[in-house]
Length: 476
Image 1: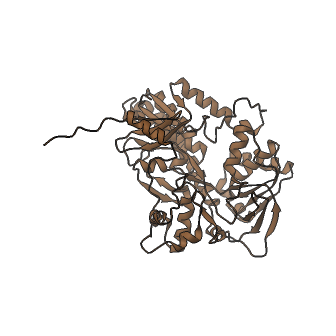
Image 2: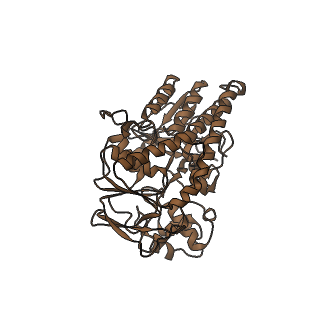
Image 3: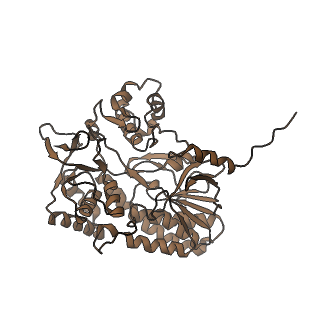
């Protein structure tokens, strides 16, 4: 692949916004995304051949996304799907995998818009087939028109729960209930923080009305504490929670289900930023580990920008504005446009972004995961799914010298599996922080190495044709 001036990694709202602004300024821009469809989770387009009515969950937000994609294409942006960015190196080059072949590109600017992934909450049985995330259920419904199960229970916290439940029932699925971990009083007291967010409140009301019309109960202050089944999920145990989300003895109840959808918020996907040597800081209100950024969305690594959920969990609208800011500033640095030409668009994006970040902070604080939920983890509860390592082993093998998260990883192999710690890293950090009475930030993070995701040995071998020859040996 010929190296463009700007490479955007991720084709969601942030990536599209960044690509549009950089290309509008005259830069050559390529957007790389590892998934088949453009738009990310928020603008996910239905699979080819799927027909949907105007009120179908299959096309929610999809028309807006398609319009933005076409606008970007009209400015010259090239979207490349099914392309995995799996490595980054000190000279600024990126290694990619496309159609089974590895390649190396070296753009002038890199804009990371890799989004986020769902936060794992562990409890006995959470690894059973049939236990999935709310985002996975949403992807199935919106992208493929496939129901995640026959008898579905939603459990977690935050508005995504209601949104996904409404989309599932609109698609013909049976949702037997939605469990919100926060008590109703907590949400009621937090109401004034969302004053003025009428469009979002109206959207939430629409979801609630859809669920009510289908007889789906919404229960507050309750969650799933155990999943049961052999070999797949057949029932769950739910329990009431106190203010810190610790289960209240005597409130347990069993429910027959074949699918449990969990939604406890998002974690920024910072792996590529970490691999590129960007400085990071731990900010619980933005989802955990986030890159240190300038007002222009540039990292500590010159020429590398981060936008969207990868910069901190703030929602799709904030992601798009962050992407636009990153795209404009990348173009400015290359001399494509002057500050005078772009100042109006930049100030408008910053103004809108400020409002979105205020809303996001309120939302993240109101629906923050409480520490008592960790009480659900027993010594037998698996933390690292890939390597099948339980909490008891992590706790026992934590020696005096293994005081950082990466050292514990080396001792136990937790995080060495196929997902490279995507699922277990935040969970292990929170558990170890509680065990050692240390702040999560003091434990550090997993050391990230390429490849970021599994690739074949054959693809690695292909790289030899892409790399420059080694320097000749000097005879003395």
